Length: 241
Ligand code: F6R
Image (cartoon, rainbow, N blue to C red; front, side, top):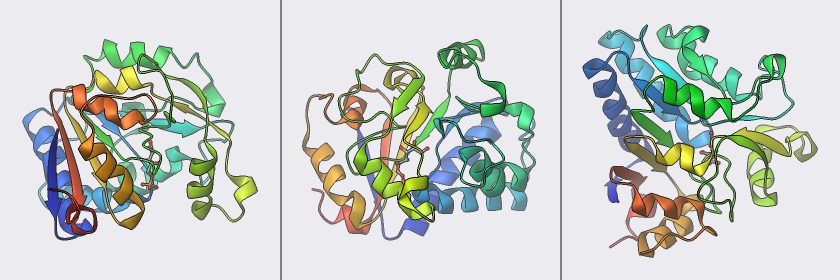
């Protein structure tokens, strides 16, 4: 598990976005695994900036988002559909036919079909991940079985509190989501995890000291993946050896 440290979130996000840019340039029909959340906004700004400044073909891409809140419509501005459209897809001309989410209120399907759709397109070439303070990846909260696939999940109290900053009232935060499972994520050929700032310091320090995976810290499964890079800013990096 490689850990790369950058002076700022900006520099780290640019480095990560260049990895995705090069992947798309090298293989225009790539399957991208994408994440949302506060951490990723600079990443999408940099990636869409690069694509618009030095155009590459994005029309053959397929994207699979990690998760979506349960029971909210894709038009709802709080949905991850809306987040992705505004911050990335519409900026670079990725059509909705190329994008996939594990849940859409308007067209509900068996969530486990998501794993089959990913496999049918040859699997995820590169997966972007954030991390929760409790070590969640996607919305796989502590003690999720490592062999889990895409399914409806209950959000933990920590996650509900952390995500309340995006809502007017904590009571508006959905209590459930549909998330790729841990085994779904682990099938990606390459994984890039971003973590920035004080809030993620403790979990990354803990993860960096672990030697064997523990279901209590979902991200620790990444110790067994052959191609993972964790990209952090100096706020976190100065505590790592
Ligand atoms: C988002 C996701 C989550 C977030 C994590 C960190 O699609 O799957 O795992 O990456 O909750 O969120 P932020 O970046 O808001 O701290």
